[in-house]
Amino acid sequence: MASDIRYLTPISIEIKKEKYCRFKKNGIKYIDYKNPDYLLKFINEQGKILPRRLTGTSQKFQKRVNKAVKRARHMAILPYVADMMK
Amino acid sequence: MNRYETVFILTPVLSEDQAKEAVKSFESYIKKNGGKIKHNEFWGMKKMAYQIQKKSTGFYNLVEFEAEGDLVSKLEIEYKRDERIMRFMTVSMNKDHIAFAEKTRKEAAKA
Image: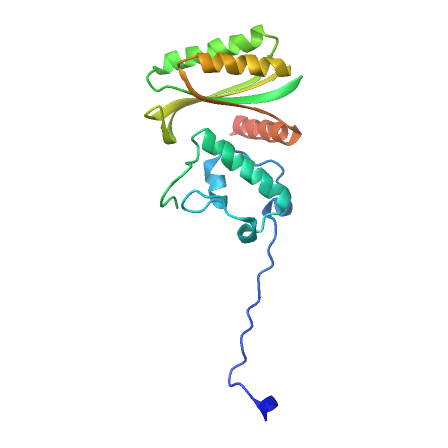
């Protein structure tokens, strides 16, 4: 019978890690555009801004991240286009 | 009165003394037009992330000041006219930004 199927090893069910907003958790209110090392966490190796579906940032802070990255790009602190940044 | 912060990049053609002189001239311009300078930070020669006017380095400087809004537009015209300045940006500071700036300054003073 179909319901009698038994597995030798229990099937591993992927447990998704709960995403959280690092700014809310750590109480950071202002994201500095003058610090490229910190902003590096929110861009990929091409210099593109990572979506919040990957970083888990809340919408409120994603807006601030975007602003900070764009300001940094204007002041040549971060590149507009890059290759192999990390 | 609002608090503003300006970052500008000076050409690397200048010597360090000349760059500092240019910074001073802008400081005096702010003072003359009714602004109050809160903080000034000369970062020195830095490598830029991409080339501006075919140059890959520049002198960075940060000025924090308090002024009325109409000074900002006047100041930006002044920056545009000056050939020594390659890039500039003025941002108005909200309360979180001010708190952050003052906190980092205190920590820098301690260290």
